[in-house]
Length: 635
Image 1: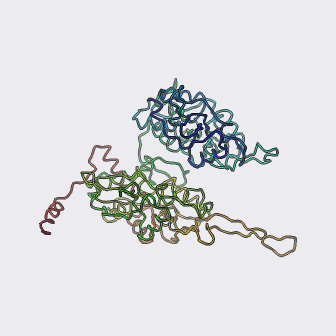
Image 2 (image 1 turned 135 degrees about the vertical axis):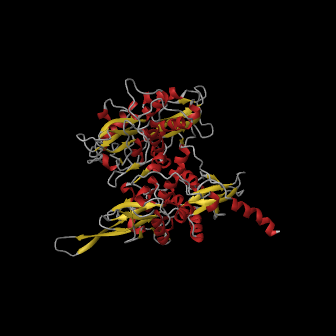
Image 3 (image 1 turned 90 degrees about the vertical axis):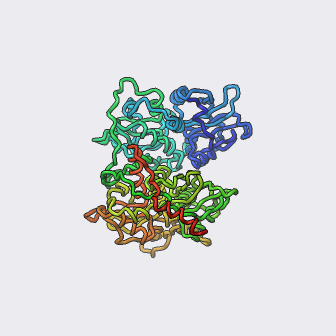
């Protein structure tokens, strides 16, 4: 494989005199690990590049430095380089991303490639890793160099990342008890300024922030037996340059899997002297409520349940054509997000098709698109009233396409894999004959599948689906996006107050024509002098909280032993996408959402596909006779 096969178009292209702080902001906004510096955007002649490591050398909000002052000119890759040579060069120079140039004689930028891009390309091309498990390639030497603690000063970690070439560190509970609680990488330093210690200033800061202020909490972990494909997928999808490796019994850190180790697993194989641990079979994962939150891939999302049960293999006998709706409201690609929101309210729908000037379907806008629009500029309370975005900025372009005879289990699988809420139904000739939404599948489950599963067999595991009423609404939205949840249970520690529901969030009036962004105003009151009357000293503006947008559902819940259909009926009754779940002793267990029901059906389709069984449903003969009789009756 050549470098040009893994390269992609650069998202951030700047001129040499661009302010370095502006480059830092662009890398943060675009979630891009590299910015290419060119002579001008017409000829794209290479002048250098900046990565996360270079831009975090600025430790203040303001700086006079320009892009050219921090730029690197090596290492680079040329389009005809072998990927093996490219990875070796990047590992030696300790860089995460490089520009791809045409040739030494013609230094024109043709693309960029990060280590995540390389791993994604290897997986997409069908490369089988030569090392099968994490234990064969993980880093165990000098492990103390990869460890930090939540209370360590952030400038020490910054120094290791900037001057010693580390891509990240594992945050452990303590040096004596090395149980991972998160990671801190170059990306965390770029995404926030809360760590700035202002080394450019003559005074600097007397108190430097600690690691726990910016660390990524609840980071995923692996064990030595974890298949390398799963670890590679997690790291590539989330731009994680490192992954903690723990002992499954003690939870203690035993190694670190770097993105270079993952590439080595695919290109070279196991490290010398390593013996392959026994790979564990992939089974439904049983997770207890008190377990720590983890990021999950799509594969793990399908497997995770609170209480595992033998997976249903038989199809329900329902075709895609049986539940498809003939039409959906549509907007054009040039409409604004605000217009789409008004259309959703007018037609009382959570789904809109997006068409171009020729009337072709180019995307779909769902409640998740709206949630992305809410979070485009970070926390809701930081957005400005005049910020407006066009539909093409937030719409989903990857719409699953299914055949009319596909089972609803197969439709659910395709929707789960694409994290989509709408599927297009086509006939044998590829013509669009209808549309299926997530709600359509859930309704079909309620009508035809009573007794199939209990709530505990499908619900999202652990306390992932619970938030406190005093959490910020921004935190709740980001949690729903990260874990692909339709709803969250609002629990204050003593009772369930309600839910945050995805289908209701886009319609909450965050903006007011007079006062602008809604927020809370807290007046702090104290005595000016001893014995004096209390007076208001100042006003503090805080973001909206979960309790400001939740749907009250006091006393409304299902038990883990209830049938899933009961949960669906409560969702319909209260117009929410999920309902709280309690165990048999009345303790809060989490939330069951419509996504969980999609996952339950998708697992059946995945199981049948693995066993070579059909995932389609033949059209019934009675229906065919009726269709043939219709033209005769009309004539």
